[in-house]
Length: 367
Image (cartoon, rainbow, N blue to C red; front, side):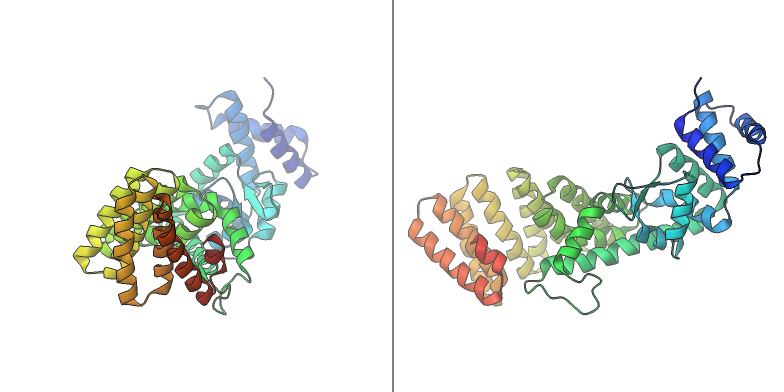
């Protein structure tokens, strides 16, 4: 039977690192390692034996990083993420592990991935050697990194003037978008990881931080619904009814994107009722903005117009021009669809004036 390529790569790396070691000695060490893995198939034993020998050659810094890497969710991770896992600079350690074929460089510079069998082996070592407390601390550092960085990126996406606070880690909106695009799969997996481990506060924070990006920039309704559902459950567990309502509203926007109109109406109705119970008029009106769109896209145009007109009254009373702009745009679309073109033009003109006064060039262009 042929030796698996991964085992050959690792064995070659071991020989290169210990040039004076005879090949026969390496074969003997591999045979001994295989004998401890009797329950595996011959192919699996060859690979795992190579892992064990390579792992023995690692010093503690390299071994600790290797054991913690499987905690990172998603198909790969960045060097910066690895830094946070071990709470130190990890780039040189990663390069050394790559030379030993224990990690692989990703398709993009600065990203790394683990072969599935290596991931399993490293995770087993971590469970056995690091203990639950150390692994929990590493996971907390990882999630905090994702939350803090996602929140900085989110501020750029929501900033109408394209300027944010002086301490934001991203210099420009395109930098924030590039990071989010590169980390999207890992970020969605991180929400799942946080939810699965009952970390309710991190689940909720990360879900909120990703909403704008997933819905309005990446256009990923599936990811937005998944993270939103985890965020909603976390809000319920924390007794945060207001945040639960906001998450329902976010999920309704994602359902609209997926053309799930009835589901969007259901989620909006539930969120509006929750905010009404809380006496939160502003958020109730925000939900009704989304509800107007859901009614309109479902073909229930009279209901869309009625909801839109009611929300305008609230936004005028609250002196909320940005929200009023969105309501006017929704109302204009519903009026246009019913053939009430004169009224639609008035709504769109008012919306355009507000967008320009706010410096919202993206909104003005859409209007």
